[in-house]
Structure formats: C-alpha cells, structure tokens
Length: 619
Image (cartoon, rainbow, N blue to C red):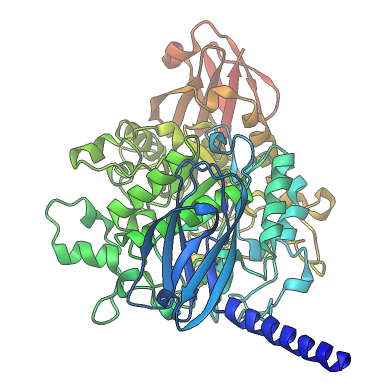
C-alpha cells in the first residue's frame, strides 16, 4: 500500500515537473535577457515572446508597478515596461495568468553594475584603432569552426566562406597588437549571422543578443574585453542600427508589420543620402533612401517605430554594461531614419556622457559628413542634431588613395589634395574627434593601390599618425597585405598569415615574417608607439602651409612641444627652405627625426629624399 502510494506521488510529481517545463517553454525569448540596477533611465521595457503570450495578464513580484503593457497585432509578443527606480540588484518574478490556461512564472534578474559604469571613458584622439575581421584574423579554437545551430559551415577553401577565425584568436594575439602601437580594437560584428553564405562579415545579424557560436560565446566576448583592459587597451563594438539579416528570429515572426520598412514590392535604397539634406529633394527619393533595403538579405529596420527604437537602444546599452565596452562604430549610420537615429544616439550618450560613437557616413563631400556630427553648425541650419560624436573622414580616404601617384604638384594635383581636405575643417563641430584612415574592409587595400611601394605607405601612415583625429589601421596593412576589391570582397579580406596552425608562415612573430613584412611592421610600430606618448598630435593645434613643388608641410603643437611634418611627393630629391615656416619654427634651429633619431639642422634648408616623410620634434 505504501509502495503504491509512493509510486503514485512520484508519477504525479513527474507529471507536474514536465508540465512546468512545457509551461515555461511557452516563453521562448526574453529580451533583454537580464538588466542592471541603478541605470540612468529607470524605465525598462522587456520583450516576452511565446505562443499567444499576449492573452495573459502579467504582474511582477515585490509590488513593482508595471507602467505600461504594449500588445501588437502579433499575439506572440508582449512588451512590458517596469520602473527599476530604487530597486536593488535582485531576482524578480513575473507571473502570467490566463483564466483558461495554467499560470506561467518567469524569473528575471537585475544585476549589479560595475563601479562608475556611467562615467566610463572611451576612445579618443590619443588612440590608434585597429580594425580587424575576426573570421580572417586568427583561429584560436578549432572546435567552434562550425556549429550545429548555424547554417554555413567551415570552408577555408572558399574565398567568401567561413574561415574559422574567432574571439580566442584575437585574445591570443593581443601582444602583437600592443607591440604594433594599437590601443583599441574595432572588430566587424560578432553577433550571430545565420545567412546561408557570406555570413563571415557579420552585418546580417540573426540574433543581436548572442555572439555567433563560430566566434565563441558571450562569455568569450567578455573575456576579450577584460584581456584588453588588462593591457590598457579598449574594445569598440561594430553596431548595426539600420538593418538585420533576413534570418533574424524576429524577422520570421514580425512583432508589427512596420517593425521593418516595407514597400508593395522589394525596394532597394537609392544610396543618395544627400536627399536627407537636399532642400529640393522629392519625398519619394528621400523615402527610398531611408526606407529602402540595403540588399535583399538585409531587411531595413524602422527606427521611427518607438518599439524598434527602444529595442535597439536597450540592446546597445545592454552590451555596454555586459561586455564593458569602450565605444561603438555604427554601420551605415545615415541610412536610418534621421530623427530615430538621433534619439538612439542621444539615449546612449546621456547614459554614458564620455562614450564615443563613430558613425559610418560614407559621403564624398565634407559638408555632407560634417552635417552628421554632434552640434554641427551645418545641421543647425536645418534644425537637426544627430548627437553623433564622431564621423569617418571619407574625403581624406579619397585623397590618400590618389595623391602619392601624382608626382607633379599643380593647382589640383598632388599634395594640394591633402591640404584642401583640411581647409574644410571649419565645417566640423569637433575636427579632433574624426576617424582618419587609408582603407577599411569595404575599400581597395592601400598597398594594392600603390603596388606595395613602402615609401608611399610610410607617407600615408605618417599622415594618419599626425593630423587631427583618430587614426584607424586595417588589419594586415602593417605587414604589406594587399587586395583588389574589383576581384570581390574576399580579396580585400584575406586571412592573416599565421592565424592558422597550418599556415606556412606566422607574421605575428618577427621570426615568422619576411624581411619585407618586417620593414612594414617595424616602421608602423615605431610610428604609433611614438604617437602614444606625443600629446601634441592628440589634441594640439594644427597649422599647415600651401604645398609648393609638391611638398606639404604642417605643424602640430601645444604649449609644451612642436612637431613638424614634411611630405615630399616628388620622385626626386628636393631641397626645402625653412624660412617660410618661421611662424612655427621660431627660434628652433634643430629637430629630432623621430623615425631615425637623427638630429637635423632646420635653420635654413632641409634635404628631402624622394617620396618620403619627415616627422621632426623641434629641439
């Protein structure tokens, strides 16, 4: 009798246990998955996703008031807003009740923030940012090369396939990056991208709360951040506000029809971002620019929808807190709804007043780029402020890709192109907070353009290291890597040699590099190690002189020091009279060449080698 009774109890217990599992499984997604106590904005909107979840009434433990519940046409979504004001780090219990169904209970955690999290510092003009594509950098963990939950599998033989690089590969090579002079890493997106092909670039994200398992885990990303901080280095996340991938779980079951921008038939953006500022633009052209899809596999997010905007805002803040981030680079920044993206940016920089965000505003006109920087004098004309601290200097990119092949300086050829770029700096609200670069993952490789002429590479790197702004290098250029975009994106995104155990050489180590690779690396490392400790090129003033005879001279200076930069773009040795630069040279008669450590007489004339640069600290 007792045995039978015990057996019955066991069966009932097991039944109730499995019932509880099935009821808990009713809620398939909770986003954010957890949150933090003591946030600047106490309002937290939690997305609960599960079959017919909107049919349930919801309450929260500890008497916490629910300030808002939003239901949409899709009954599988429930957006619940609570106030976390004065609630300490703790576990909350949400209870979902329906008269026709069993009660569902769901734990939700408010975690403790790091000390002084809101006051975190960010990247700035004292930094050098190293841009890498994780799939092509280094394979530190071969066990995650493929994953059962993602479609595309490892195939290093396929140029556009998954090659196996991962977060552990980055961690393994931080010493290399530190030796190079890099202070900050910007990695292309690491969140899950479950496209069937070309998923390695990461811009078609399918889950923005989850690191792609082929790169590692969320915990691995946190480890990367911690490892960087131990070396006094910084981590910048590549954030995408404009679009997701077609395989994002939410795209497959939209919360609302207008969660994404949709036309009657597929409509691609016209890429004419000038329509946003053009006072003569037609409404259809502007709408197509902002609401058109980037490509068919990337649905365009509708930031004018408050639910979308809040979702992306909380997601960005969650990653800052969770991974202890130091900044964002925002992809295709000015493709998003202008008012929506300005609110998104403002929310983040309000929560983190020192947090830097650089936006990709790929325009070929300085005024068009400057318009998108925070407090832009141009934006004020149209009563617009993006709140975006930093933009990318694409006009400088264009100039650097041409000038060093223009051997004869003229009114519009040669060094005048660099000079003219900086004459437009008055258009920027903050020229010191602009990202300067000679290439990235979407452009021709610099060394391809100039056929691996290291003299021209040195000139370009010297410019990045000494002009106003924040220099960014693209992985592999420092060892002479080249690639032609006309051959396809894979050609400008080759694997870093030595990142895979089977590689014939290992360019992460001096002994694994060829002499030519070491020539590139040694120059780059010396230049940017010098830059680390030279405050005059971080925030000092800049004064430049109109190029003469295809020679461009400019100075960076503060109250304590002066640096003179001379670029000789001629094919022949050139003599440069220094009399013209008396305003900056003043009583100085000698200067130290930081690249050779030689002392040079600058009292009257300097001899310049062909296609060369001098960086001189005035003595």
